Amino acid sequence: MPMNPEIKAKWVAALRSGEYRQTDRGVLNDGEGGWCCLGVLCDLYAKDVGDEWEWTPCSDAMRLRTGSTYYPAPEVRAWAAFHEDESPVVIGGIRGSVAVHNDGTGHAQRRAFAEIADAIEAQL
Image 1 (spheres, helix red, strand yellow):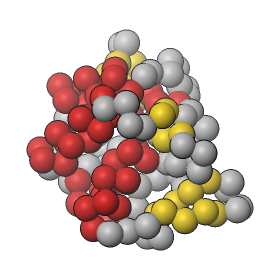
Image 2 (image 1 turned 135 degrees about the vertical axis):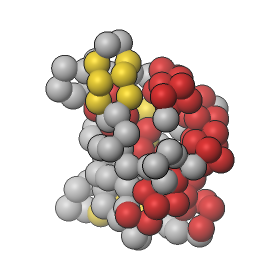
Image 3 (image 1 turned 180 degrees about the vertical axis):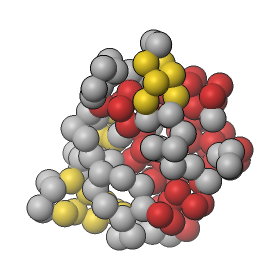
């Protein structure tokens, strides 16, 4: 199933906006102004439906009330018609989830939000 085009456009715009500072800590929202690209998607969801971020001391990061600190909640995935593990993108010849490209894990290099936005726009 293709990603919701309206949500995709908002996500790409948010990643390019400069409003979000990127983190590679492996969390959606580090609580200090740093975001994973998936955290940006979750924040768009939170703003759209009125969900809120809360601190989770056990993981030393923020999470939506409906989700975890590491992955978008099922509600976010359904809202966007997107699952990061089922919709890999290719950047620099490496195929992986947007989170892999965000954090630079496995064989992937850490990529900037702008590069991730370009891949989302072209491939999802």
